[in-house]
Structures are given as C-alpha cells and as structure tokens.
Image (cartoon, one colour):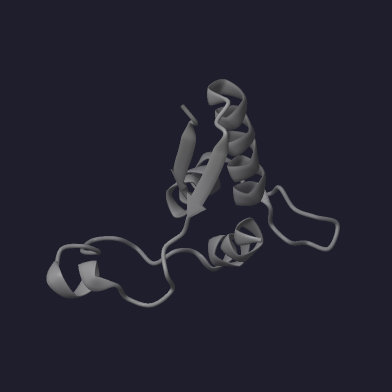
Length: 93
C-alpha cells in the first residue's frame, strides 16, 4: 500500500519562523529562518517516514468558512509579522 504524507504548510512555516533566529538572511538581506526551518523539517519527515507521495497544503489568503462560522477562530491571535509573510511566499514555491 502506498504511503501518502499530508502536511500543514502554514503550521510548519510558523513553527520554523518562531523557532529560529531572524538574523538568518541571504546576502541581499531577505530573512530566511522560516524557509530554512520548513525545508529542514520537510527533509527530516520525508527521510523518517519515506512516503510515496507528499502533499503540502497552505491556508488560502482570504477568509474561509471557519472565519465566518466561528468567531473565536482567530481570537487572541496576533497578526503574522511582515518578515514571516514574505517567507511564506518563498516556501510556497
């Protein structure tokens, strides 16, 4: 039987961003801590579980059904830092 690995891309990227220092950057100054952390975790999970296929799902940029049906969905959650939002675009590539 084939093994499918499904990952929450936003969750992994957020986790990586807050786990690693923000002084990781390219020569041009682009912060890369979330990109590096996401990639490292992805490689580790693939090596550890050896799936036949991998799907990484990301949240849509606009509000979803969860936002309209559950007022507490984002209650108390701070907005994502700008340097994290910039890296999400790179991770999604």
